[in-house]
Length: 491
Image (cartoon, rainbow, N blue to C red; front, side):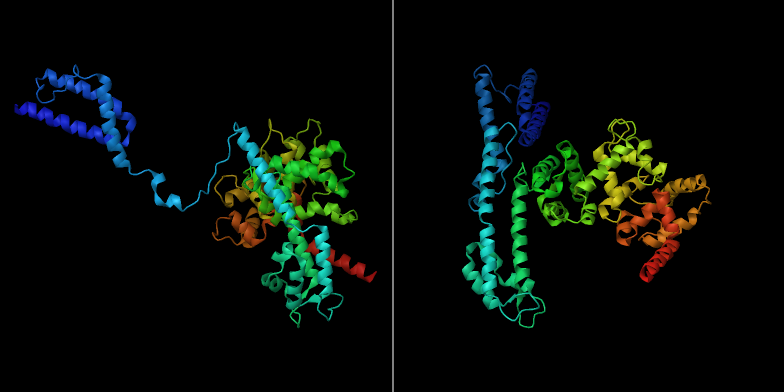
């Protein structure tokens, strides 16, 4: 073999080695490399290297060659890949803990999942104390109470507590633990707890579990959260069980449900994911406010302060209809400008329509509800997050002097329109930074507003002339309020 021929053979071997490593990483490249090897074969034959690379295609069919090469490749590839995961010893001890949800077209699996969840929830429901069992528990507590009384409140010692546990039955066993007794133990000199407090604790626990099961029935995905449509169905079916809503016309049900659901999602889903955890619903007070409407004798002031009451829902919807002057079911920026006292600045309203969801430049009822919830609850972190997004006109994640001046100029212009002398922005800026006390003396972040407790005041100063006037004349207003109180006391 000549030196030149030997050099070609070396290059060929190196090339094949390179492609073999590529094949091991990319199996789909196998046949393209094989084709290239055939081209090299004919090239080498043309160079007179038949003795070096003498593979006779005429003696073996192409299918036989491919089968042999595939077998060799598979053997090498499997050796490099290692043993199959199913052969690993951990698979014999670690149970499967993830089961993917059935696809939409897997109707049978979806039905099976729904039925199994329903059976599970029914079983959990049967484990709860019913009314008769609760009455029996109260009878046993009354029977085994430990004298003396504290006022009119019956008490029970730990020994008598355990006696009740033995007679109450297996369903009550979780409530009669030393931990529960210690939680309810206060300052009784005999080391007893109040029977009424313990019974209320049991009632609260039973109610929470019942509500959890009730909400879970609407959890279509079975993942522990409710989508907006799920919560709408829950509240719609709850309406007939709330005596305080008996006066609502059925034509208003859809608007009432929308009004109620928006409060849950505004406060419990600030990131707008479209779903809220059932645990979060149970932990907040909104469900208590909603179920408070079961009380037929609920006072009027309690109804007025309850977002879910019929008067409150009608008030909010009535305001929306009054603002909608062209009666198209939507609000334009001009129509929204008459909200409240009509003193919100044009700059702020412009930002509302820039950042919030609109349809052809107009706001629907759902977006309006978010707007109302934000303005009526400006002390809450979720409302401040809503407002901060509007105030952060440069989308920097903080408010600087430019952003503050951008909004306060509109306040100054409104003051001129009402014949008032505009207040200096420099003074207002200093007051805002003094109130908030941000970590960075030149920037106000959302967390700074929340931590300072002055978020409501700051936002009012920047977006509402009436809010700024109230802040500016706060000392006079306080003096007048004190004077009115003194007059009432004298009378």
